[in-house]
Length: 326
Image 1 (spheres, rainbow, N blue to C red):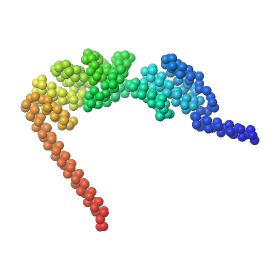
Image 2: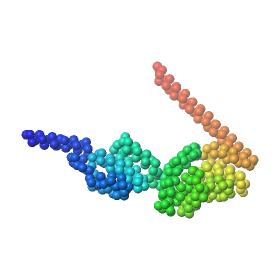
Image 3: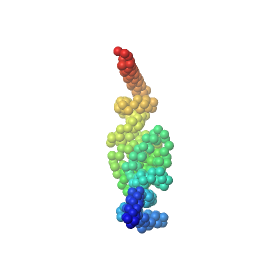
């Protein structure tokens, strides 16, 4: 009976250890590769460290405690960071963060990953789009973020020179951080050679020429960008202004065509053209159009207010009816 009690106690303790630690072994030491990985990492042997971490996960994952599993993913994420494999570093970090979201080690590693840059080209392009939007409303507010992307694009080009997106991304970041004009132009030209229908690179070449004061060349690049699909308010406004300033043939017709085209984008865009054109007759035409649009806008707003008021009065009548005795 005594032996049976001892066996029962042993099994009960075994169950508790299994349940709370996630391991099916009692007091098993960590696999040898686990300590080897730390040793390699400390000595800057990151490839060897990575192989050890992966070996532990592949061959010994079932005997690892939760704490050891957490340390493994934390170590693996740090190792991938050292190897400049940001995408895998982020994946490994996600596991570690899920296991101990409030850990100080996780917080430190998160900062490292955030500072390391994008995981891949798609992520870099997405971040660049966001930075460009912010730059338009708050110029110069995200210089550090642009600088971080510059490092990423440079590394990408070093690995593969035929990446049009990397050359374009680098040029755009350099433009917003006031980098070398020659380097900006060179990367934009390379992007266009690699991808002839690159309308965004055409547009930024136009900006470079604008900064130089070479307006005929700026116009040439803008028209090229538009001809291959770029159709932004910024491009159209600049085209209209150049048609007027350079007195291009049939400029008045072209400017009015653009004005009518961008009306759906908002009256403020039309007003930008009006404020910058110099031809008196053209300015008068645009002014009349703006006045007509403002009058139309005013009537629409009044009609909307009237409908809202009528709706409110009907609701009041209904509420009053249900609150009355009859």
